[in-house]
Length: 118
Image 1 (cartoon, rainbow, N blue to C red):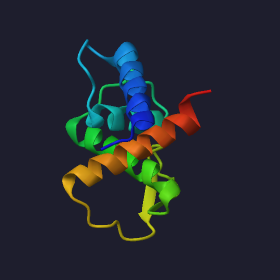
Image 2: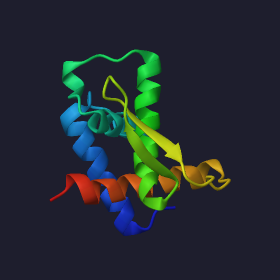
Image 3: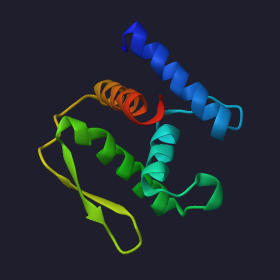
C-alpha cells in the first residue's frame, strides 16, 4: 500500500489527468501510462488518434521511461518516425500484481515530481 504522502500525490495526479483529459471518470494506471507515453512521444493527445497497437506501444514507452531512473531501461534513441526505443539494462524483478502496481505508481509519482510539477 502506498504511504499517505504518496497516496496524496497519486490523488493529485489522477485529479490532474481527470481535469485535463478525463470524461469525468477517475483515470486508472493504464490511462496515466498512456498519457505519459504520448507526452514522451511529443504529440498532444488531442491532435492524433492512435490505433490499438500504437496505444500499447505508448504504454510500453511510458513503462520504459518510468523505469529508466531505476536502471532497468535505457533510451537508445528515436526511430525515423520519432518513436523512442529503449533497451533492457537489467532484468526486472519478479513481482506480484500488487507489487507491480505499487512500483508503477511510485514511478509515476517520481515522474510527475521530476517532469510535471514545478
